[in-house]
Image 1 (tube, helix red, strand yellow):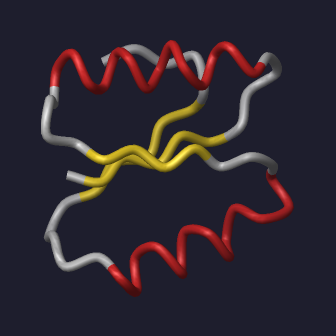
Image 2: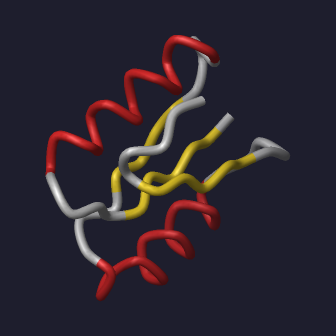
Amino acid sequence: MLVFILPGLNPHLNENTAASVQNVFSDARHVIIPSEEVTAAILNETLAREFGPWFMTLYAGDSV
């Protein structure tokens, strides 16, 4: 599964969310989006190369 993590207010929130995802979905690959300005480009580029049927989008700071 592919998991996109949208930007949050504090950089450590990205890593907290990534760790939460790995705890639940150990085989998931996460992509941290660094800023809102590049979100669409990164989503489109990553999904164009992805062959899996599932992805999830979370905000930095979310827990699974």
